Image (cartoon, rainbow, N blue to C red; front, side):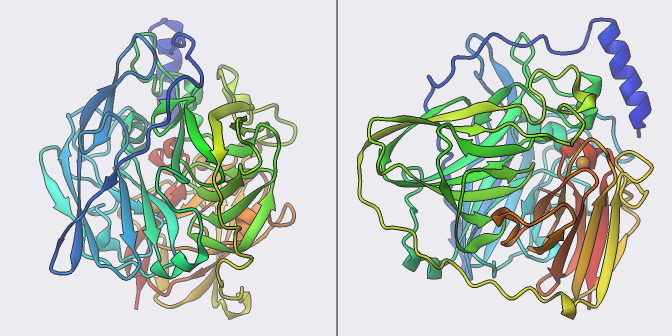
Length: 500
Ligand code: C2O
Ligand code: CU
Ligand code: CU
């Protein structure tokens, strides 16, 4: 395994020799390409189980005019994968066919790992570890082979979830190449809420990612020293289309915002600073719609919002990312001196071209009933120190797939307290197999985005975030990690096992 220092050294040398680093591609045409809505993957049903088949393979797509980018994608698409739609209470199973080429991992490889290995992680689902196709956790599936997860029956609130590969030390590259997709879980009981729910019309899946391209169109992945702190790019894609436009009616529109970027956080807002309603966090609906003017979504996290365009026929409004400061005292991030678009820089994301008025139901005042936060019932408190002393560590340790870091008793209620010791970078903390609740942040009051079901939370520099975890549906071996994919690939991950 390459150490971070030697990898940084190699990258720096490559830069000095002038053989690395992207020089930026031609200036993109903004808001001239229509948004593409990922197709919904139709399951094959047999024996009461919905079977979803994914095939990962190489593909290509013209992102930047005049160039072609080699990509990876699922099911014959040019980039990303179809949307998986699950229904609460309906048994399902996911199968993956690995037809990826044996491209070498960009970070160097794990002992025993084959080039082109992949896996599929069902991010946000509360299911047993065997439903995920991550054999041996972190190990993957060799090119040319197939694997099925176990049958699972979702029993959690309706939510915007997602899936992506998880081969240790190659996740960042595979996601960057295009392997990711949205997964929507529907609870039929929520139909009565009359939320905008016509997929691709007034209920839009938006996978937001930043990418950097080489002059010849190839993705420019991990070629600069600062990329090891988390890969960033200057081209903002939505569902794989750079700076797209979408024609919508003057009505209420629901946006399922998925931050599928390797590192970048987005402070989502609208160009006219309008108020919109946040209706859901990572794992389900909020108790009631929260009127906000911006929502911070770190890498790996999701937020559902409803924007009311009813009064705006004929107007053009932009979804943007507003300026924010990663850490007080740091102008952006000291590690990103060479980045074209730094963390916290503002930019437009996509354009809404608003057409004629279409009547829509107002949002209900009550969306969901969440259990009371009951930290007094927690029997165990665990402390996780991020980057205390050493880069990319959790409690001073790098990932070791042969070491189970935390042993959890099934059914337990626990408090997990996570402290970020890094002065200059936030880490999006993610736990597999569970939706938890944020109890508090040492830095101040909770935003609405912290007040629902969560599986990924931004831990700011110097901050401690405490969360309440109820392990009532988990069984087996799971991971927790930073969702900056280069951090987790470098070992900012751990394992927990839930046993009776
Ligand atoms: Cu999106 Cu290990 O997670
Ligand atoms: Cu996950
Ligand atoms: Cu991190």
